Image (tube, rainbow over all chains, first blue to last red; front, side):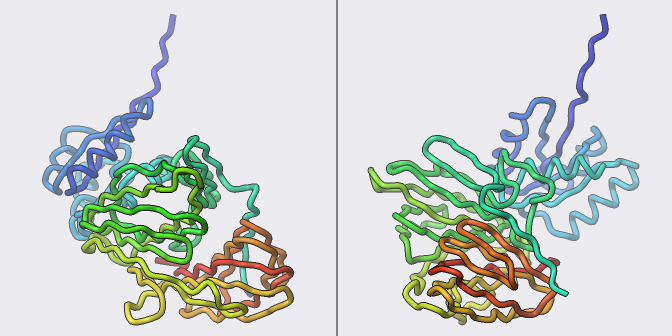
Length: 106
Length: 237
């Protein structure tokens, strides 16, 4: 008997606002086969990307464009194909569309 | 030549949470339509009905310009900036969520629903200091465009962090006026609150949305007595 498993989709939330990051993570983890990881700083995010491959990286509040650019360079060096997208809104309103769109472009 | 898109009322996403009925002109929460993500910087247009005595509990937002326009009834607003206010039909509320704000919106009327438009516009700056404002708008003037939002703090209406202008119109049947866009590269999304209008020859009815861009002006004529909202936003942002 063969067992098929859908691959887990790992999503990194980079956001300096801890309560908002936790809200986004909770919403992501509600979706079957999606798993959220929180990074509260650029350094934290870069460390997470060393340790794990993320399909989607959401850039949340408190992260500057310069920091986002540094993270993208870091991902290039790691040859990681993560889709990096800005997250807007802070909650469920736009979150799922942002992730679906990011996954569709990969 | 102007480009246009028509979203008829019955093609909007619909959500019924019991206490909240919402119609989404663009993808929102559980409604996802890849062809209806946004119109330029306009990302959310929700037509909400909140049952009496119910509301949105405290929840967060960041990096979004959030505009609420009550159409009937009132909402009690509380936020993490320390604002407590009641907003009612004839007013407009704006929140620049910026680095993050928590708020709740509650219909204090035990019997009657609150009906309002919830509009989200992408900001032109991320991570700004959160702010809140509400003002009374002119819903009595007829047959003129009445500006209720702009990018300028010293202009009519509320202001937001985006090169956007919102105007409301309450036209008598057979009235026609030309809307001149404020900025090159902007488009306009017109949402009809009630009645029927024509925009450059296209019939647009109650709760329909009509987008127009690649033009510097367009004509709106009222086929019946009609009320509508023009949301002018950058098409590239």
